Amino acid sequence: MASEVFPFSRSGGLGDVLGVLPEVLAAQETETTVVSPWYGSLAGQPEELWRGSLPELTGGPAPIPELRLGQIVQGGVRYLFLGLPEFDRPGLYFEDDVYRFCMFGRAVLPALRHLDALPDVLHGHDWQAGLVVAHANLAGIKTVFSIHNLQYQGRWNMEEGSHWTGLPEWTLGPDALEFHGDLNLMKAGLTFADAVTTVSPTYAREITTPEYGEGLQGLLVRLTREGRLSGILNGLDQERWDPRTDPDVPAYGDPAGKAAATAVLRAEFGLDDAPILATVSRLADQKGIDLLIEALPTLIQDWNVVVLGGGDPLLSAALSGWAQHPRVAFAQGLNEPLAHRIYAGADAFAMPSRFEPCGLSQMISMRYGTLPVVRLTGGLVDTVPADIGFRFANATPEALAQACAEARAEFDRPEAWRARMERGMALDFSWQGPARQYLALYRKLGP
Image 1 (cartoon, rainbow, N blue to C red):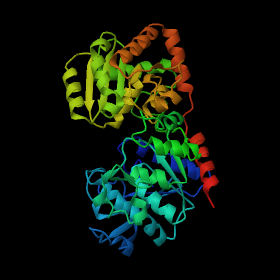
Image 2 (image 1 turned 90 degrees about the vertical axis):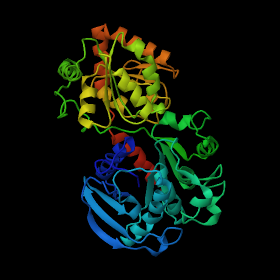
Image 3 (image 1 turned 120 degrees about the horizontal axis):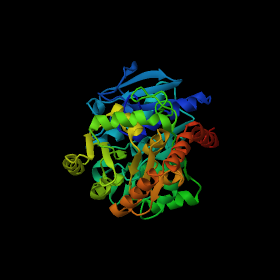
Image 4 (image 1 turned 180 degrees about the vertical axis):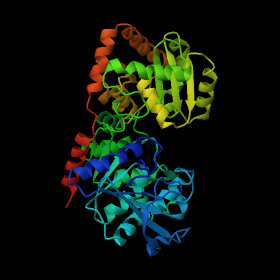
């Protein structure tokens, strides 16, 4: 169960994971069903299987008058879309999401019972799935809960939110869902899951510390001690991200062919002959975009800088101002074809993240022969070898600028740079290995 799944709904990495992992699991002879909201802006037309009401969902302050259930079968996976009035609007996420996903979390198991499709193991992703994990646990279903980003926890005032959960009153205390006076749906998933995973081994260790634990480190230390917390590194959709077959870029399969993609990107933004340092990212402090902006006066001495992303309006405004400089280009929002052209055309890729549970951009960039410059945190530690990328420890503009200077010096040694590119393009980030790890975990928990 997840709040988004590519290509039907997506805002970021969570949707990407759910767009690949289920089909890889299905190919490994696992009957796989994905349950996600039937958004008003869903890309795709599910076949409606059922429409009606569920009596067990009519309690609380806002009764649910109608529920509908639709299905799309694709790649050997059954995608079930659960439609509630709260999700019948354009877009994915809103200020009332805690309420919306409480209603959704209460509806999932009754809807699956209606189809006689209760699972052996239910795997919930991020806080939006926390409540359904709690309900599944109390129903005797084995559960896995995956943390994609601990910073977002689904918190709401307990006095109001306690009426939304449909759970027994004993679950609302500090040993379960209560967190500093709030209802916390991330904590619901952590507390009730039989196994908890994160999307990289390093992040699994980091979140047991005060620096990264977001106030939940005590619970996560206990889960580690009990053997219930582990890290399974995300994979990459290597068919979608393949420079040899990517329809958005000039095809190439080795470093020599990359020059055409670089020429396309240079012409698109009117850049000079300096190498290109790029970022495709949410504009957020987590991603260290403010560090990149602060480092720009130094970076543009040696690099053209290209940024694609949307998010924080202050960061967006700062980048828009910098885009007046001939060596800085900024494209706002989500633009997948442009993202492909940037990954292919850039020479280096900056990820100065303050924390990064896994990250996909560094995997994509290496696959396209674009060398990553990354802060040593989370999945960036696990995926970027020192003999391919350029790594730095401190979340400061100075440390980022120094790592980029090291990359620039290496760029001036063509044979060494090409060797790094070749090693990066040869890395295997397929989902086959992670899927086998998940499958082993399911079998360990299953009936």
